Amino acid sequence: MNKEYEGYFNYLKELSNKIEQLPSNVTIDRDILYLQHETTVYKIKAARYFMNKMRELLPVREAISLDDINVFSFQVDAFLLTLSSTLDSLGAEINLVYNLEYNKNEIYFDGLVKDRRLISLESDLQGYLEEEIYQSWYSYFRTLRNQTAHRLFPFYAILPEGPVQLWHRPITTKDVYFPDDIRAQPPHFDKRIRVISFCERMLENVMQLLLKSYRFMETRLL
Image 1 (cartoon, rainbow, N blue to C red):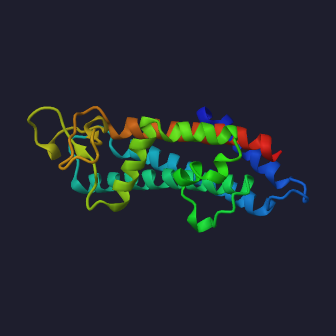
Image 2 (cartoon, rainbow, N blue to C red):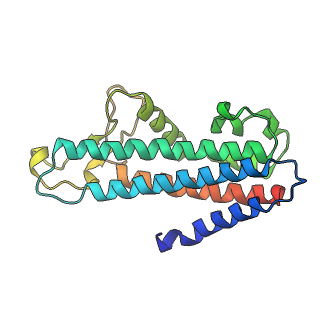
Image 3 (tube, rainbow, N blue to C red):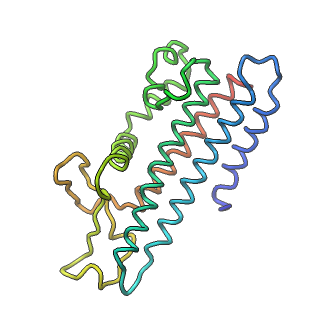
């Protein structure tokens, strides 16, 4: 484990231990909550794995093949879908902790945050999450995730500098971009949103969202 994240994942493990040790008379199903929390941890670790694979797949080379680009695309897709799934898993934890009585198969993170049942509790968690889902990074991330799930082809561009042949030049992660306007047809790429650096920011933002959410949930749970 990266030392940079060692403290983060140690905290998530400690929280798992606390959930496991909840007294049997609490109104929450302790075993289900424990498994759901472990699922969220698994998913955020998987997202980090795919992020690291993205970094590894596009080092500077003398040439790069279409197969290399396809493998990179697989990792981008996996990262976006897994990171989105992490939030839905967090939503399932919130559902259990706050007794919202959602069917587990109907939990959608954005909808849960804005649900009247959670709003009626006037919790600090709901206020924090509602503010977060209206941030520009989150809106872009969700739209990008939906494009990933439903589009017909990888939704990013490889834009090397200068009039060169793409497959016969050194290419780095700096050459791969998401569109600045996802909904535009055709999409427009202005070289501001690099795939690697933007995914790194999304991962960091989701990890912080998890951390702050758990701090709020601990006050109710423990």
